[in-house]
Structure formats: C-alpha cells, structure tokens
Image 1 (cartoon, one colour):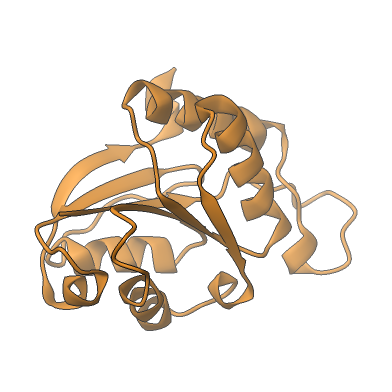
Image 2 (cartoon, rainbow, N blue to C red):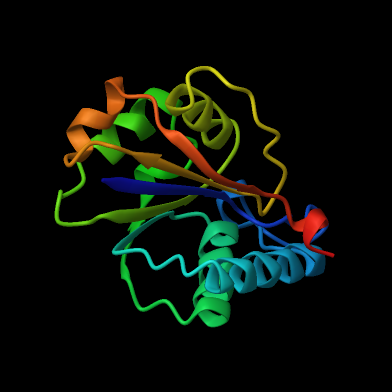
Length: 163
C-alpha cells in the first residue's frame, strides 16, 4: 500500500523584493498556514519516508515550516523539475520513486497539485488553495503502478478550516 500527500506551498508575498518568480517568498499568512498544516499532519501521524519539494523558495520555506511543526526527518529531494512542471511530468516523477518508500510527500504548485489529485481520484475535483494538503492511499505495492490506479482520499485539509 502506498500513501501520497500533495501539498501546495503557503501563500506567497507578491510585494516582496525578489528578482524572479522562483525566488518569491512566503508572506506571513503563508508561514502561519504552513505551521497549521504541519501541526495537523503531526496529530494525524503522517510520517513520510521521502519528500519531493519544488526548488522554488516558497516551497522550500513551506517544507522548513512543516519540518519544524511535524518533527519530520525524512529523506528530502529538492527538485528543479517540480517548479512549473506539467501534471503528466509530476505523475511520471512520482511513479519513478523507489518502492521502499511507503509514504511520499510532494510539495509543489498549482495547477499540478489539483490536476494530479484529480487524476488519482478518478476525476474528482478538489479545491486547492495555498497550504492545502491532499492525502491519497493506493492499494499498489509499487509506485509505477499508481498511474493507472484510482486511489482513496485520506484527507483534504485547508488551513482556513483549522481555525
């Protein structure tokens, strides 16, 4: 059985001083929401074996705050290919992960987070605001098999619902 958690980065600061989109940081709300989500994931006992994170600053800042809130010490792979990736590329990337990892977290962007979740949930549409987390469980023992499998929704958590 495989578990996949798709997390969209926290709200970014469009008014910050940055030279390119890749370097746009989180704003204060984005930081607070990442901590809220991290606290929720800790209470839910989500413990990834492997974390795949876009190389964008805002995703890496989200990851740092999640790690702090959860105490995760998982294997982390910061991936340039997850920045502005199309959903098919992301699905192939997930499918190429080692089967020794039972639980994988992907921290990325829209639209791929929502499109990938929809694909794995049989076309079901989910709202994907910033700092949203979507957990999906698969019966497969191999990541390469999940591309053609429909998963089960484990969680769909929006920070505004956490108070």
